[in-house]
Length: 481
Image (cartoon, rainbow, N blue to C red; front, side, top):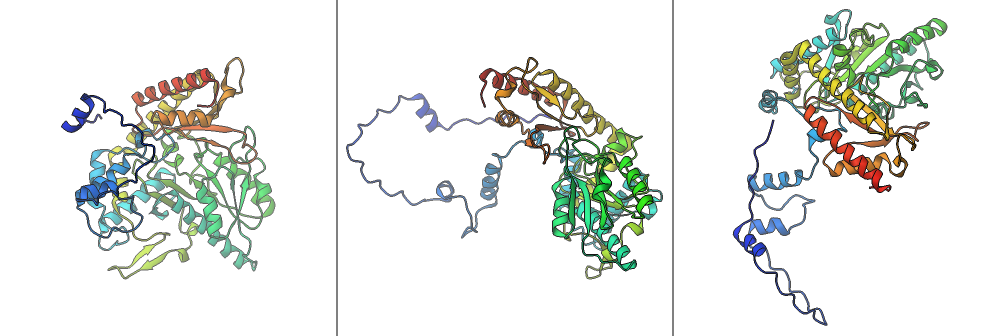
């Protein structure tokens, strides 16, 4: 899709200034004269030029066009979302989906009695996801939409905590010291959950060559106070999948040896809408009896603009009834389980559109195109010389790479860093994040590239050409950019 060329020409006065002779320099006075005061603005247009960026409510109104122009002008300084290789969230949607979102933006999802069709669409999406994730009895799955995976993860964590508390009380034990086990690579929302809801986070550290949670050594972090284990299907650090089936198998053995039943929550923010289409033999979802709940982001590989997420529990036992409240002051009794209340129904409508529009075959095609582009870029990056891959896009359509140690294969690479590469690529318009891994692997600094629908092969060629030029320039200079 191309945009029409914008024809912008200077006005006649500016043309004459450009074409005319340079002004004669005035002699510098020995004493600088006092500057006359600036004249008071005579019009709203002049006022907009001279006034500072507002940090309090303006005293008077301005026209809708002027307000829109001011906001739009400032937004021009933001990055181009299509060139944002840092984000996992959707940056392109079809015009029909955009139109549906615009038509339903004013409808409050909380007003279920007033907007029953949007409520029905939400329920259908839950059933579709339950079947996609192999729920033994999809009609018993409990689930809801959320503002994103962060809220969905917190709801999943709350259900784990409440179930643990109920088991402890039934056994006559205290509930004072709950903990949750996860890899150090989890998204920050899990650390928020632990902080906000007073659960001890037990983060299994990374090690060289192991950059996410595995079954090895996992049970050393578990005890009777463990409310659950979080397994990530698609790490934000490098796009890799954690071995959910192996983690569940180790916890099965742990239960046999100790009697402690520890459920698993799968954080599938990205991978839960990729793996079902591209990795059908991978066992990670409700096929595993120990998986109690799963979350995903509809605004990532669900092809909806931010923000919408989904939280699903395998059955009623996995989501305690006392977490679900009923609201009857909106015209009818409606169950609600969320951290937020009012939000637009437009995202649910867009998600339902996406599921209808693409179906299983279409979602598989879109995921395959993104993975194919990721794999192709990984090969090209590896050929550039100074880089080595951490991941290659063969799981999530994302890859992480770092500078290889300087040597014959990468001469000069030791003279600059991935942060220099990131800064240089930003100067070319690309938002390519650079960051260090967590503790034990903090010496590993990487660049991460996320591929999404809308990142076309033409954009991929432009990106790799710019990365090649940037790399050659940095290596030739031998110093930081």
